[in-house]
Every structure is written in C-alpha cells, then in structure tokens.
Length: 418
Ligand SMILES: [Fe+2]
Image 1 (spheres, rainbow, N blue to C red):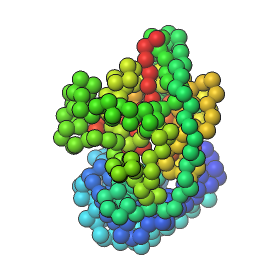
Image 2 (spheres, rainbow, N blue to C red):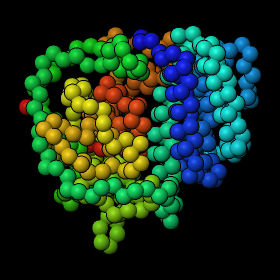
Image 3 (cartoon, rainbow, N blue to C red):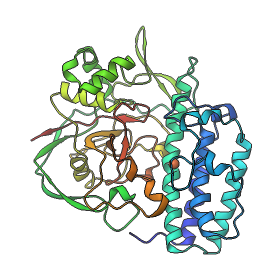
C-alpha cells in the first residue's frame, strides 16, 4: 500500500534488527538455544534460523539470480507454516533438531546477511522486493519477542529458577487509582491508513459504529487480581465462560502462569529469576479466559478491539517496551487525565475475535499466508508488552493468540458500557 523505505534506509534498519536478535540470544548457552519447552514455544536456535530463512526464501531466492542457497535442507527445516513454499518440519518437534548446531545457524545468518547487504548496497531491490524485505524486518521483531517469551517458559521449567540475565528491578510505586474514561462512540474510523508500515490484517481503514463506552485508565494490577483469587475467582463457575471453566479445571489453574506460592506470599518467575510479586504492577500471563472471568467478577467486561483503538490512537506510542531493559511489567510512573499504559507492559486481551476487516485482502503469493489463514478461533490483543520492540507497535496493531494461551506477556484492561 505505502512506499517502502529506500535501500539506504533499509540497509540500516536491516543491520539494526538483525544485530538486536543476536543481542537477545547472547546471554544464552547452546543448550539454552536448542531446547523446546512446549509445542507453542520454539527453540531460540530455530528462531535464529527461521527469521533468516524468511529473507533467504522471500528476498534472496526470489530477487537475486546469483544467490547461492546456504543449505537446501533448511527450506523444510525452518519453514514455519508456508504451504506455498512447501513441506514443513513438525512444529512440536523443533527441539529435536540438534543439527544444524548453533554455530552453523550463526554461519547461516552471516551468509544471508552478506547477500542481503550486497543487494541493498547495490540498490538492487525493486519496490516490491523492498516491501517484502520490510515485512521480513517486522517479522523478525515478532520473533524477538517470541525469543523472550519462549526462553522465559523454558527457564520456568527448571526448578532452580535460572535467570535469562541480570535485570534492573522495576520501579516500585503505588499504582494510581483506577478511573473510567468515557467515549461517546458513534461512527468511528479504525484500522491502518495507507501511509506507514502496517500488516495486511490492520487494513483497510474502515468505519465501525460504537455505542458509548468507558475504558479503564490503566491495566488491572496484581493486587486487584489477588482480590479476585481470594474471593474464589478460580472456584466459582458462574464467573467463567464454559470453555474457560473446562480449561481452568483441566489445566489446574489457580493463579496466573509463573506464580509460585511461598510461605510469605506469592513469588513470580521472571527473566531475572524468581522475584517477589509486585502488587502494583499489571497482572500478567493470564489467558483470555482468566481475563474474561476477572472482568465479570469486577462488574465490567473486556474492551472491543475497536474501542481500544479509538482511545489508543489519541495517545503517544510510548511505554515500557523491551528497550527499557526491565523485561517485566511495572506500575505506571505517572498517569495524566487520559488512559495510560495503553502501550507496553502487557498485551491487553480484547473481547474481539480475530477476524478480517471489511475489504481485507491478504498479501499476494506465499506471504498471503502470513496472517489471513489464522483468522479463526483466536482473540485480538492490543498495545504491545515489555518484551515487544517499541518500533514494532502502533494503535492499529493486532496481535492474536488462542484463548487458553498464557505464555505471552498478556494482561487485562477493563471496559464497560456507558
Ligand atoms: Fe515466523
């Protein structure tokens, strides 16, 4: 839709994004990088290879006749889900790929980086190819977040609570009192316009009709979530969606993911190891079902994604993103009159099913599989988290996960009918 940046700008962006991925992997051993803790999470080595595969298949093979493929077997090994590209190695078995080893995957990255950099240095990309390369950079940023969430899950499986790396303690302060922000609704425009980068699922910009509603001034805190737990939130079926109640029972949920009871209160597994629960920080690692049950208990509901966007598009895209280095949600420093913490800290579950916008057109070719084919059975989350690169998010950004998923930095913001 919009013009991609020129080759010189893309060359800088490419170098920065690719280096950042290696920076995220730097604290990890080869053993850390090889293991897979569950089917939803991938080994870091696989993330490192798959993001490289994306550029090899969609930019280099498609756009450069002289490009020499690094290893033809990688076409299948590191294809995530693109049927138009061919077969894929089974997702749940990615942790069994002890070969190629980490050093070979690093060499693969260098091989592809040199070829891409050569193309960009020569200015040898058409506008279409530059557009695909730009998608590859946003794709790699998505995997940067997954590296953090997948490593956190992996390390949480170890009873010694190892730290990913040492991290500064988030600022401890009292969360501001929750206030309600009223919106009149009516006919509103949502979705990404034609300018600037956006994924196909954010377009086209279109009108929706919204009844008057209120949005909470900040996300739900751990203190508030504890009240829900103490009030029998996990044992009262009336609060839960039927599917949620079944999931909570089958999986034995009694608290958010990564919470551990101690004699003197709850501890939580973080990327810095086990820490005391910060009661003022936004609650995190809850499923859609838990978010929905909490909202019902609180006499409220979750926001619709377009309600959320209507408020968020009036706010600056600032917050506790991965660059803050906390890698943990934190209580807001200061809240002005408008709702705060819309961006960063925690992804906010919405009650909107992930579905195409009116007039949605997937990208042409294999990249049409990027978003469109997942528009069934998932819920939209908004706003980015403390593990999201800050330059990756915008008000129209639509993330999506299955209702029982808890390993992303997912939290709760309340809404209600006005
Ligand atoms: Fe991917």
